[in-house]
Length: 325
Ligand code: NAP
Image (tube, rainbow, N blue to C red; front, side, top):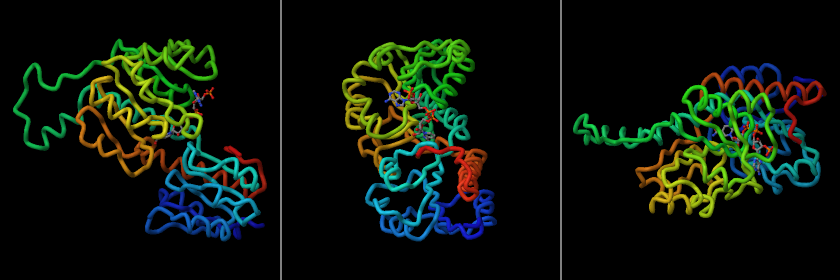
């Protein structure tokens, strides 16, 4: 198969530079109206394209992948998370999967800090008050929040993004770092961040002023933070989620925020995006962002180019740089 004849589908609009790169090299089809793909369209795409470049809004399940070989041999995902793709089915069907690790680490860590600061300092509440014309002026007791410096940040998962958050929080904001992860981080990393590993999730939740989630989505982490875990947190605690919506039981979270079991939360991701649990929308003590973790011009372009490099390797018959399956 020559490079020119490789048929490729990009399921959502990508930054211009990345689309141009693919268009110059492959028989590439782009989603010009940028609407989400239907399951039927994705299913048909498996028969029509050698490579599909999906993203988090595409649910690529076993029904779409099938068991008999289809035309698609590579899913070059735009994003580091791949819980929207059934990896076991891909393996069985002989479909390779790649992702885009690393290039979105800083942007996502920045967004976790944004949520942390917004939740701690009640920035959303303040902006809503001002825009509604309800601000009556400066006063010593107006919208007082919490300071991050000197507080304990508990990280659930301690991979690339969690470590980048720890770096910002420790060196920039003077926070103390605890982490819970199945594996132990390198000694040099722990030392640089003065990070201490705790043996159980419960211990981390009990000791942290801010808890930030950085595990992958999927069956293993589904509802990892439920009513019991939230109850283990401090009443003054802040819960931040830039990982995946399924990691938190949102009914339990809504109840806990309403009844003061924890103080506040900041979310970037939700279980059934773009739907937002209705109760959360009505609450003042939660910050809600629309899945903006990697949303910088620089990062989105780098993600597109990273996915494109995986397509290049596939086209050349070379090892895939970011192979997941
Ligand atoms: P990563 O480097 O692979 O880190 C994931 C960490 O989670 C690892 O430290 C892993 O360590 C730990 N982990 C996995 N399963 C676990 C479990 N069951 N219990 C405890 N720890 C577990 O990935 P990353 O690049 O930091 O990205 C993390 C996630 O962030 C992605 O999977 C993605 O879903 C999400 N993300 C969201 C956005 C956004 O826009 N909001 C942007 C980028 C990424 P062990 O395996 O050793 O436990």
